[in-house]
Length: 187
Image 1 (cartoon, rainbow, N blue to C red):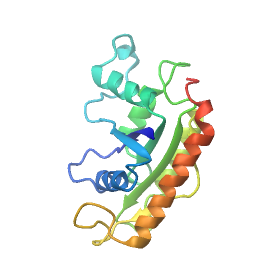
Image 2 (cartoon, helix red, strand yellow):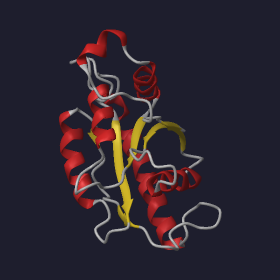
Image 3 (tube, rainbow, N blue to C red):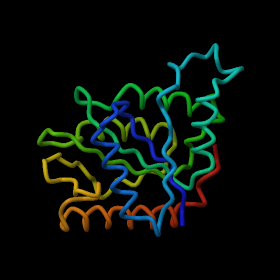
Image 4 (cartoon, helix red, strand yellow):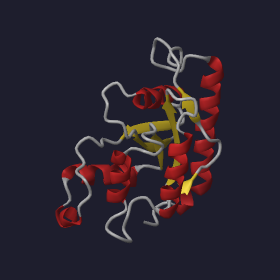
């Protein structure tokens, strides 16, 4: 079993992507332990704070350091990823040469009411993740469109076809971590 630092960069109480992350957790309890990373209290990145890191930043970095991989479940804002995610990525990359991202296995997916899901957001995100030294699982790409029947009454995935598709994605991510785990810890 692997531990995932799960990052949902939507601060909204009823976030579709938070619901998606929770539904994913229901699908893979035998493969992964989900540790949801709290981004609510992380201040905007400021080098002046690096010598006395805010507790929220320290907690985020520890969650990532302790995890076997990172799962990002993100909405798309204005054809890109949310500022709260960029902020977390910036904090995690510091201080220079001692970031928590280098060598960390990562996968991303997201949901949107729009027809293209989060395709444009994830294209931008992959560029940043590559620069930060993540070991990215780039396939399969998952861009989900929210519909009224997407979630089941119990909070899980509403259709067997989508449930199977997402279970296969999580199985692939588990194999990706197993294959690339040796690269982790090089931050």
